[in-house]
Length: 210
Image 1 (cartoon, rainbow, N blue to C red):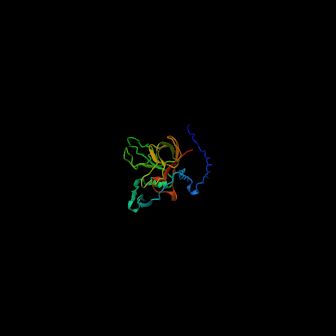
Image 2: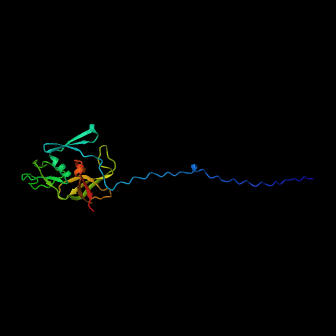
Image 3: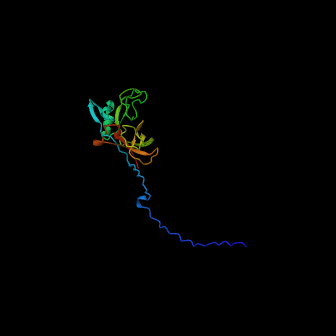
């Protein structure tokens, strides 16, 4: 006769509930905020000091310490002194040929800017003329994102070529505005005068006409 297997039933003990411990505050995930980007100013500023002027006769010789005293740059303005002096006084000075024997202008020359002391066609001395209320439009432009050593204009900025009303040539300068622009936008000339003058070509800049 086969023997019966005796199976003992053992009651299972209830599982102990393990309380979840809260993670210490120091172990909590830290969220590091990215540094806020500096918002570009609406207008361009210059990082330069006025250049010292030495007067030699009727001409200016300016001292421009671009790279410290060892890198002092002496710039003799010579016959173009009236142009740079005019900028410090809020005047835009150009030149034109008035020589009746000139084979090109016949004495009825148009205004050149940047100015030239002598006519490129007849080599006669040109006459100075103030450009009243200088306005024009952007002929072309480029965006300067990064400047080299010695750059006095705060980046980014627009370097622009301007076609001025009543001027034969195109003048290169910088735009004080930083907003989006287009070729053909109207601009007017502005000047750094008095204590703000740098005594350089930077004393001429342009702003948008709105």
